[in-house]
Amino acid sequence: MTVLDHRHHAGVPGWLPGATAPRTDPAPLLPDPSPVRALGTPALEKCDPALLRELYRRLVVGRRYNQQATTLTKQGRLAVYPASTGQEACQVAAALVLGEDDWLFPSYRDTLAVVSRGVDPLEALTLLRGSAHTGYDPRASRTAPLCTPLATQAPHAVGLAHAARLRGEPVVALAMLGDGGTSEGDFHEALNFAAVLNAPVVFLVQNNGYAISVPLSAQSAAPTLAHKAVGYGMPGRLVDGNDAPAVHAVLAEAVERARAGGGPTLVEALTYRIDAHTNADDATRYRTEPEVAAWREHDPILLMERALRGLGVLDDRSVQEAADEAEALAARMRAEFHAEPELDPMSLFAHVFAEPTPQLREQAAQLAAELAAEAEVADR
Image 1: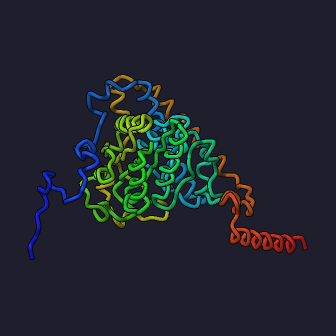
Image 2: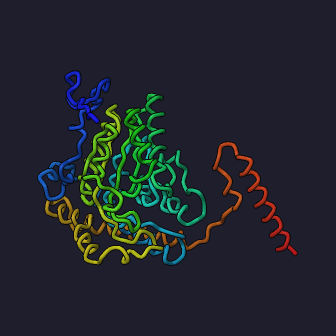
Image 3: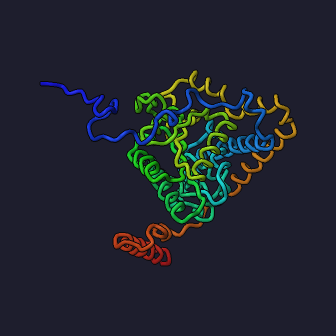
């Protein structure tokens, strides 16, 4: 059998007869050789001091939010809570880079990003409390519902961004995912369509090392997750996910590039989930305490406070003000979650479809009959 070598056919090295040249030069799309950092580098001195203080404030408030939500779960006030403790820099930066008309598409671990976007904490946690499909108005907050199925929010972000561009609206969508989400088919479809349509969307992958208990090495052999961008024809960026100014700068650049018509970007933020996957998870079964301790030394709040004090843009008063605001938020969360919600079981069927399906109407009728029977028994 003769093996034909077409690598130099028609003067086009590496391409078969009839094949076209690459649509995109891969070199500019390759991710950063090492994670982008601002803290501890000369780049930090060029940052706006007001922005740095705002990032610090949000980090401190966000950490307390995570702690209080975790406590509420232990008390039975929440059904489940996937904490983003240790990942707060990604959360607050994602919310802060978006404009008022832009859209955020969060995953189930991104309630802090939702709160940082301006949604009331009680409303942001309604889904995890089990009280409703979602507790806030997505249109009012320009924030999609928290997404529990992995990566299904990514194609939605692409669709909204593409539709906005067709309407001539300068809207950017930012989809947040975990490293586990990059192994889902929805992730592939979202990136493929985003690049082909040149949609104004940014994908933020928070690589916290584990998809529940599965380490990244067991699900991807790519040099980095940011390298996956090249195969779809979009730039990949790699950033230290615990460096809040760096995450903000990289995301801001990607958002403005998308807004200007430059198309999508995939950003991988290297971070770590300090807490367990959820309150139902025992993280000690798949990771060691020395590993967690090493990441605690790379805590985004500690890194930020140390660097900003060194620059002279943060003092004891600013630190105390942030701590006081955080405690006030925690106190309000405790007070509001102490009261039992008044729920209407029939609301389960509202806002599922614009036109209820026959199956949905049947289920609603069945529940209504059961509730009526229970009420009749109670009245006897």
